[in-house]
Amino acid sequence: MRRKVQFFGFELVTVLPGFSCKRCAICCKDKVVVLTEQDISRLKPHVDKDFFEKTTKLEKRLTGANYKILMVDGHCVFLEGNSCSVYEYRPDTCRRHPFLVTERNILVAKDCPGVNWREVQDPGYYKELSRSIARNIEKALKNGIRQKH
Image (tube, rainbow, N blue to C red; front, side, top):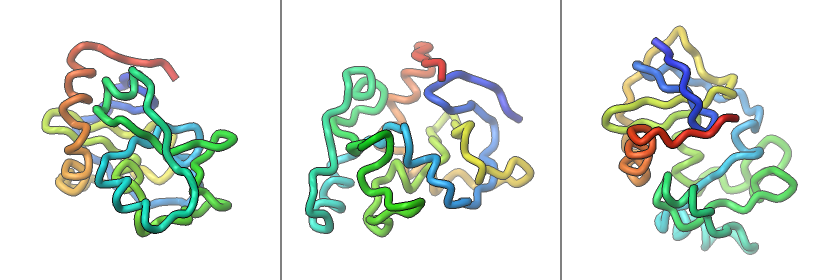
């Protein structure tokens, strides 16, 4: 069951749909890819360029993250063609895309063509990847912090 909620390009749903990446790179363009300290530590040894910048006040309030991936001309600094140059070391935000799964909510990126609404999957994997920002997301949903996209 889907319930439309304007929340930073996500839709609130009751079950986690299936997913198969189409390698379209939509998720690597014009997005906020927040970074945890663990993400930065995982990436830093494998890159030789600046790759992050400070989050805005709103981004920090929503996610708790201090940093995000640097976007150049509207796309991720690691995007090469439609591929990620650091795929093995990519941030948890990228690993869980197109989903945000908290204890109470499942959010699905509305613009992802890889989402398969005819399938259902266990949210456990995505819940673990969303753990670092789940509390902030829950609070934002409860308090009605929304953005139209």
